[in-house]
Image (cartoon, rainbow, N blue to C red):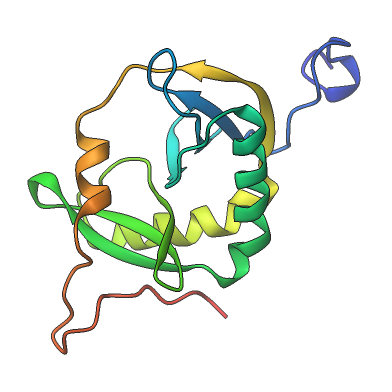
Length: 160
């Protein structure tokens, strides 16, 4: 088959069966390196919350994220325009965020759980992509968690 891993060019590693992959990127020359998880059709599923000085440090950050994926807890936050976003938390530290806002809270919840489920199966693509800056993605990262009626931030339950 033309698309199988055994017929892949020698200079290219075989892709994961799901097509999910981590992409390293920066938003402009000299900007810090970050990572994001992309689906097979290159849709942004989520992003690391930390910035790294270079590609190697970012790779270490991805490895740390994957080592902690089982203990991360999703938290939902309000994004601009009455939308929802998720954050993946390790205790009180934000480790990753959604790649885009969601129109419904339930879709955001499902996306967070799916992100946690699929991230360990993703491949790591080499190199650092240069991306244009987006205005919405910076704003919701700093917003407070959505208040729960009893004053506790809304946490999303993980399936058992």
